[in-house]
Image (cartoon, rainbow, N blue to C red; front, side, top):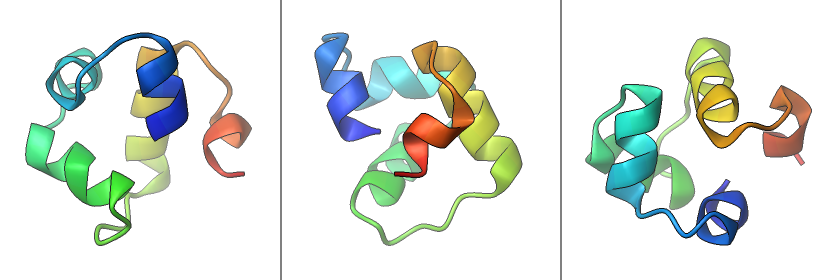
Length: 57
């Protein structure tokens, strides 16, 4: 997720805004201290314009 976010030149705040999430939650996911639900992962994938499986690698 972080790699895809950075490839787009987005900050955590920008991704959070696009996905309708809090920036601190996005940060927690990237640091692997938060375990997002499938629904949240789907929202992030949609915001990044990628497939759900791209985030699960």
